[in-house]
Length: 100
Image 1 (tube, rainbow, N blue to C red):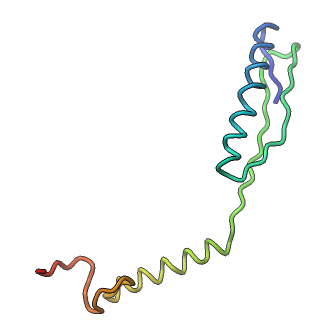
Image 2: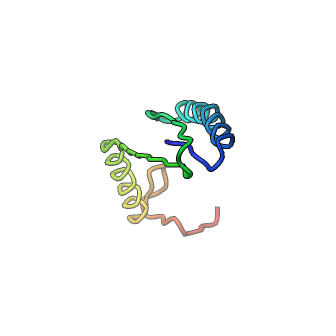
């Protein structure tokens, strides 16, 4: 990221603000998610517009997704056939309301 503006004072203030805020935000995100930050912030007094390039890489665990799909379909099939996995009788539907 390259920080720039029309005034050198504003450029320096924005540069200092970003250098103090961004590492704090990224370290907070790292505490909850697998997150890696690679990058530098540069200050350019000759440019008038700030430039930034960001790359986002998303990784999924295919085994977890596959197990979730299988469990979801098995639950849907059990509900459709009349029984669910937590002990109701086999011919009872989800939307029926018996007295009792």
